[in-house]
Image 1 (tube, rainbow, N blue to C red):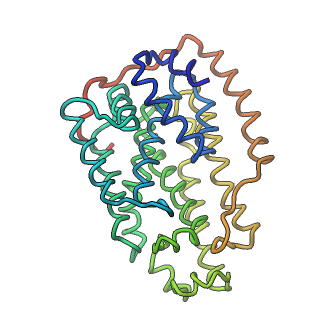
Image 2: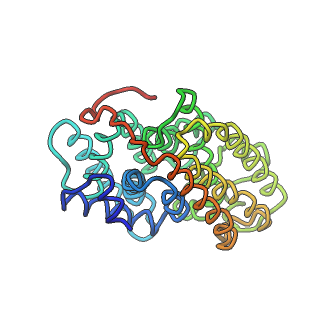
Length: 318
C-alpha cells in the first residue's frame, strides 16, 4: 500500500522512501484516526500527510513519553531540523520526510518554528492561566498543523485557512478533554486555570480521580467550547478540493465523536481514556471510502500543483 502511494507521488529515492515509510508507521501506530482518514486522499498525497503527522509525533514524544521523555533531545533535534532548512538535508528519516514535504508543498518555515516553540513550552510549562494563554500554545501545537496540511488538501478559497486553524484547535481541545488524567501524570493541566477557578475545581481534586459535580460542569463547559470550534471549522471542509473533503470530513466526524464518548462515559477522563468504538469508526469510514473513491474517479485527470517547491524558508503565519 505504501509503495504504491510513494510511486504515484514520484518519490523514487530509496533513502527518501524509507523516510516516508517510517512516518507511515508512526501514523499507523499512534494516530489511528488520522491514518484512517489519510487513506481517503488520492494516493499521491498520502505520504505527505504521513510526514506531517510523523514529524509532529516524534517531536511530541520527546516531551510526552510516559516512559522515556527526553526534553534535551527535542531541543537538539528541532534545532538541527531548522538548520537543515538553510542548507543541506537532515539525517533523521522523519525530519528528512518533513523537509521534502515542506519543499513540495511550500510550507512556510514559520509554521514549523511556531510548532517547535509550543513543543518546547511543554518542557517547563505545566498550566495555562487563561484561555488566551492556552490559545497561544495551541497556535503552535495545533493551528499550524492545520495550516501545514492545507496546501496538501488544496483549498479553493483563502477563507479555508481560518477554518483549518479552528479545526486544528478543536482536535487539540478534544485531546485535552480526553486526556486530563494522562496529562496529570505528566504534571500538566491544559484546561485553563481560570475555568478551574470558575467551577471550583483544583488540581488536587482532579488527581483524586473522582468525577464530582464541579468537575462534570467544568468538562461540560470545555466540551461546549470545543463544539463551537468544530461548528466554525465545518464549512471549511467544502472549501477544499473535492478529493480532499472525505478525508477531512471523516477525521472531523470521528474526532468530534470523542466528545460524545466522554459524555457517555459519565465524564470519567481522570482514570480512563475514552475512544470511539471500532464499529462506529467503521460505520463512518467505510461509506466515506466509497464516496472518496468515486470522487477520485470523477477527478482522475486532476494533478495537484507544485507550490514553492524549493523554498521552505519563506515566512508568513498564514
